[in-house]
Image (cartoon, rainbow, N blue to C red):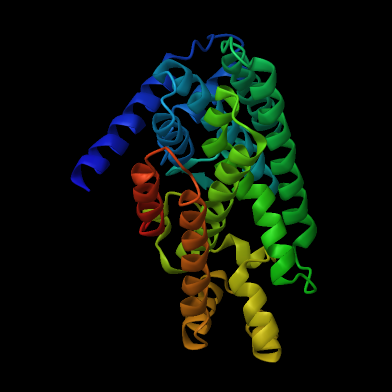
Length: 319
C-alpha cells in the first residue's frame, strides 16, 4: 500500500506540474486571471489519476496519458466553476469560488475558457483524435444533463432513489467512467471493453458521490475545503434526504421548518444518525464500490491491482 500511495502522490504531482505548464496568457486579465486561479488550485485529482492508472494497465504512452488526464481535469474544473455559480457556493478547494472572488459573469467566461483549453490539449493527440474528441464531448453533454436534473430536482419531494441515481450517473459518474475509458477509446478498444471500463467508473462514481454526501453531513468544512450543509437549504435531493422523506415524512417535514442554518445542519446530522440513515447510506455506498470491483474482475489480460487499490483509497477518504 505504501508503494501505491507513493505512485498516487507522484501522479498527482505530475498532473499539478502539467496544469502549471499550460501556457495561460496574461491578457486579458479579466479572462485569464480566474482561469489560472482555478486550474492551479489544489485538488484531489482523482479523475486524472484514474485515467493514468487505466492507461498504465493498458500500456498507453505516458505522454498521451498526460494529455488525456489534463483534459479530464480541466473538464472537471469547468463543471465546478459553473456548478458553483448555479449553487451559489462560496468555497472550493479551501479558497473563494471564482464568482465570489470576482463575479458571475467573470466565472461563466472563465469556465468556458477552461473547457476550450481542454479541447486544445485533446487536439494535440494525433492517433484516434476524432474518436477521443467525440467521446469527450458526449461525456460533457451527459454532465450537463446531470446538472440540469440536479437543478430540476431541487425542492421536488417526488424524486425517488431511481431518479437520484439517474442524476448522479450523469452529473458525477459519467466523468469517472470516461476517465477510466478514455485510454481504451484512444487505443481503439471495442465497444464492449469500453463499456466495461465505463461501468467500473459509473459505480465508482456512485460510491464517490454518496460518500461525498455523507462527508457533507459528517465532516468540517475546513477539512473538506468547500461549503458544507448548503445542499439542505437549497432542497438538494441526496440519497439521505430521499430516505428521510420516504421513511419519516412528518418528522422530516417538521425538522425543515427550522430557520437557523447552523442549528438546522446539526439537527439534520443528528436526525440522520438517530434514524440509522447514515449507516444505511454507508451500506449503499459500499455496495456501489463493490459493483465497481465486479466490473474490474471482467477484464482479462490486464493487471487491475492499481485500480482496485484506487477504489479502496476513494471509499476510505475523509475529505
